[in-house]
Amino acid sequence: MEKKIKKKPGRKRITFTDEQLEEIKYLAGLGVSESSIADKMGVSLSTISRRKRESDKFDTMLRLGKIQAVSEVSNALFDSATGRSGNPPNVSAQIFFLKNRGEGVASWSDVQKIENTFSLDNVLTEAKNRMKSISSATDNYIEGEKLDIKELEAKEHFPTNKEDTKISDKSDISSPKPITDLIERK
Image (cartoon, rainbow, N blue to C red; front, side, top):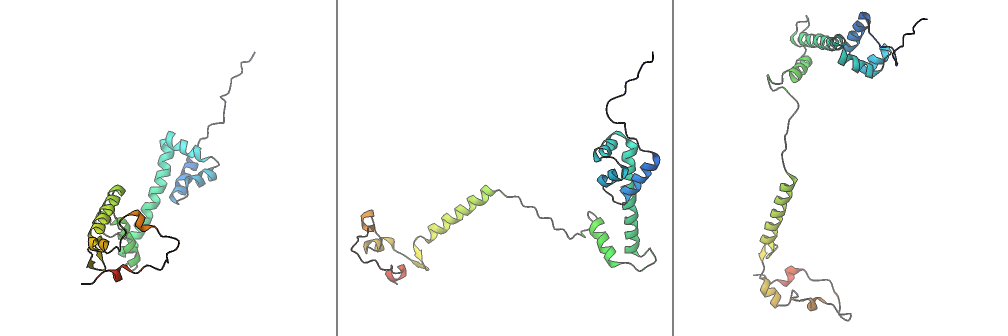
């Protein structure tokens, strides 16, 4: 009797040939996303991620493709900016190069970095303190004139208790006079 060899459960392990790895390197160099590379190779994105973790060769090919493409474009940009390409130097290329590569070497950046460190609690406390100082400073002033509150209370312009504030049904209610008319100007 022949013994049957049991197969491992699951799908067959996907391996990439050297030709496929070169194609992956080329696609990565073109800036193709890993998701699109997975579609092109007929595998899932999780397979690409797993191969990057498990295989140094696979991960290296992806990185080399990206690094090589960036290197070529950077060299072409530098050649265009400096005029080494045989053409006159390109000012736009110079500006772009300096803005993106000059950080740390020179301050050629359009980006302004603003750091704000504040506490909302401190802001609210300061605002309350300002309101208190403003209200205490202006309590006895109207339109720049100092009021004598006791004098006004004595003239019964301001009610001193709750019973004085009640309005009877029989009284005529007219629009109140502006307080500035009630104050004797000095």
